[in-house]
Length: 604
Image (tube, rainbow, N blue to C red; front, side):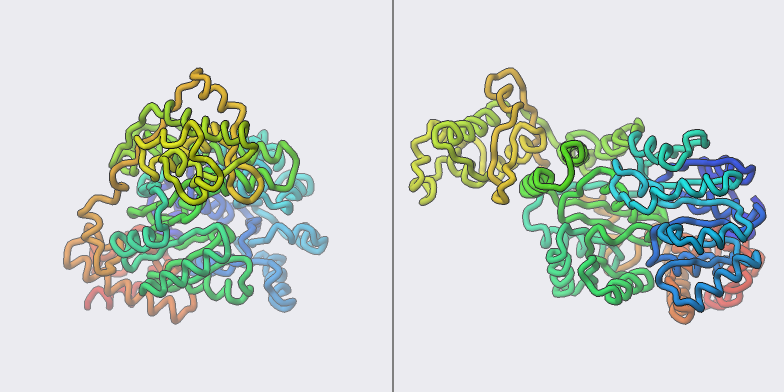
């Protein structure tokens, strides 16, 4: 507790932190499942400061190691890293500090363990503990498998008496079991915290014109806010970033096809500057510690619930209200099904991918609380949250059996009578009785189902197709054209042995409460919401001081202080250095380093 207060500036541990820390300090192993923003890093940082020796942290986040070390150095913690970005001189400096017991924490990329010199170096120093961050990377069932993580069993084999702590922000029961098995942590103490992130509002909107929908979200609810937009393809990333810039929203692209220097520059700008939007593929984001990401948007369907949870979890690490928004439509389902059918790997691999997609589709199509569905995926029970789109504007379900039979009958007749398969648009035209040139030319106006679907509009029929695909009652050919086919389950619907319940879309997608939206207009940061006028003005002065200080030091603003700490300072207005030291997040090092400047800023 003394280390927690003196170094990190916190008065109490949260949740299982104290028990986890006690376990590791006593020399025991631990496997920790805790959500993003739940305080995982303290679970190994505090024991590393208490136990003799250096805490060795295995992390895949090479691009972020410098920021992690900078953040610890700002707290007075002696930290360093070894990875492929360093030259020989810098590596030697860090190695010398480690051997001289001058480091509290040493960060290593997992591939460094393939280098015999690294293992020799660790063998010559005193190790306080091994922390395996992003431990889900060891699991082939999970969403971010990294082969180098399979070598981490060497830690236990060569250093059996050094405690190990493995940590991840997401894991189903299957992933949890695989992590424990592969890292030889089946006998460790396992800690599973609640995965609930109550400050995040989950919303899934029917995809219409996704970039325009995104622009509306950003301009009406998140003006001036930092956020992340995920796209499936590199081309979509670049086009979306340009679209936002064309509409006066500062945005940067990030994907694996960009030059490494461009990626590094864009990531550094996102971390260090206020109000930037990063448009990226899933190559971006793991380990991003930026606490004031106010929204995470997906313009394409994520491949798994674990991936979706991990990506949306990058919003609101500071605990302030944030948005997780996804645009989802028929083409997403068609594309994902086709990608699975044409993917490399054996049948078991494709079944795994299919199971991930089915769970993601179930989350998209649910008529109940999104949060309840999301937490249930991780094996955790909960009650309706009142803060997701299905709670704020509950959709209705309807008996879509007859509609499903009409659609499936059309597919059946085209397959049996004509030996042909077509995409959703053509099938909908037939059901609506549209004598388009193509329908007429192909003779499909003579089908018995022609014009049988005029009780539903075009968009409603596309919703039926999407939901039948989601339920596995309709399939997609792997021909690259999105042609639809029957599945073994289709027969149950056609015979009347299976009832099909479908979701009515809400009249209008749910938004944040109006008061929250209007209070944000004009680019005011979320952190000022709830502060009175005087405190808000002080917060802005502190924010300006922090920005200048961070720029001068070449570090992200949150390395100086988080918004939550500035909020508390603005509310309490401490008059002395000692009073400042009582604020959450102000440890001894930061109090002594920044205290005089803060008091000047408070004085106006």
